[in-house]
Image (cartoon, rainbow, N blue to C red; front, top):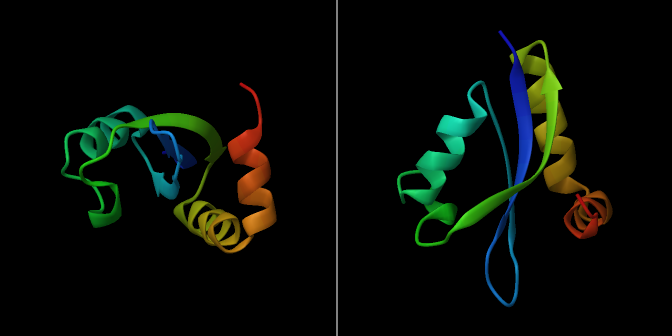
Length: 82
């Protein structure tokens, strides 16, 4: 089973990002956009701007934590063009 670390950006004038992990990226994005995701994501519309694939849950959680805590990397990923 594959796990993904992902970054979402909301669609507003002052974009905010959210980092998470999942084993089903499409379902998770749909959950966030339907208002049933993490409390922080409710009430906003999100777009996927970054993803990484891992073979274990442990690796994905570790990378998610690293991206969440590393503001420089997070801003770099947020401003990166697709």
